[in-house]
Image (cartoon, rainbow, N blue to C red):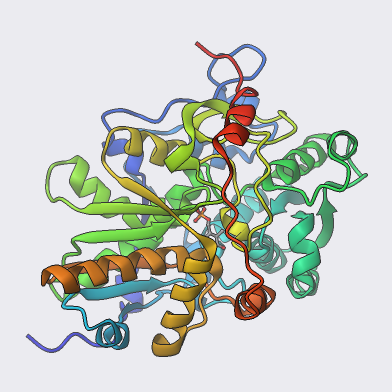
Length: 455
Ligand SMILES: *Cc1c(COP(=O)(O)O)cnc(C)c1O
């Protein structure tokens, strides 16, 4: 067979026409969202006050395996997809590993991340419903940027609540969002009831995704013609992100390549859930086996040190309860530099798969992540996002293990985005000022006390 090219692309006509819903093949379905008042499963009607109708359908459907991708969304995808699968020949050589390393690169659009895959879908359904606009939160800024791009494309208003620490660390992100016409407010803000309450309880807080979600939901539910959209965690987002895995698998299949190990960083779980979707589908159906590894920051270790329990998705406790690996909705992680991974919870789909032993998880320290990021940038030519670099770190570690054992494993990891807006973090790392904050057991125990009682 021919040598595998550095970049494997699909032709436009080979791009996926449907999203794949992993839940359809799960024997143990993810636990349903609960109404925090009644503790009954949320109905479509209740959810449609917050979310767009079509997205509510996708959220609640755990039996339909494939959803058609509307033509308009497929046309938008064509502007920046298919994204390449890259064979990391240079990294392999540098590591002197017999492992074969591939990565799926999702940073090739202005948002600099995979988030645009779901942003365009969510904005499309909002537009189709005749809404005026959407509200959301953003941590690192990638989701807010992606949604701003999608909304300006479809002529929808976009209100973004941006976690204050990111708003201050990444002023350029804010300007990209404003370029696309979004309004951007640092969270917690004095604009909402929940923001004022959080500021009273935690004066001077640098915010968290959980706070910003509460603010965005409050604005959506109190403003006519608006709904709330979320960039991760939810089933619908994993569904849209399945385009990553479907493309990756189709590209690798063209060359008869089957990964042994699939690695992704995990914030709320959307890129990992999307990347692994078709592979995990095969695993669930007993057709193939893969080792799947979620990588999270040691400062926000939902999988590796969290509890599998029902919890609020937000700090203000206005959202439904989700059963997930969680650090407690009150947990405000140290202001580390992987903003997109600073969420207290995790996708309920991935949580169930992890609980069923179908995937592994590990946590990594921030300075080790930046070491790996730099090593990667120097040989592969892409400046990776700090979030993505968690996956790089684990991929390098696995490749080094192969060097020691002589095993020729094939590794696929998700390179979710670029780090051009994260140069303050790179600066801290280079100046030796970066810290490896790890929460103590006592801190986590304190946070677990706020978990709601659900039997
Ligand atoms: C948001 C983000 C993540 C983490 O989010 P998931 O929903 O866990 O995928 C990872 N990488 C980048 C570049 C991001 O923007």
